[in-house]
Image (cartoon, rainbow, N blue to C red; front, side, top):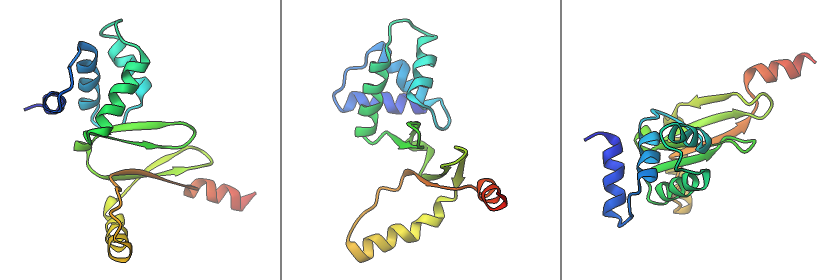
Length: 145
């Protein structure tokens, strides 16, 4: 079953009505293959129908996040991106100086998750998150100045 159909079926099974707009939004996120912003989804859906507004996109994304079907993270400067949970757990390293986004190896964070559970009994939700900092290029620039 294509991924968009699994998301649509999950919405139906959760008792949510599937409007044509909601279906197009679900298809857009399912077929994105990675990260997208609400604005990118809106533009994609709007190219297929004029009967959608940005508020509908945001409400649908919030619902998908609430149901655990989509994850979201803030990449800084108001850049929030969404990804289907099928994309898998992942981390972004975001340079606060130039805005560069580097995908980090998620395996690095498994020991942190385990240690948080062991020490504090805390189960961290590190499925999709960003760590702000400085990339190597910006660090080199700062040192040479």
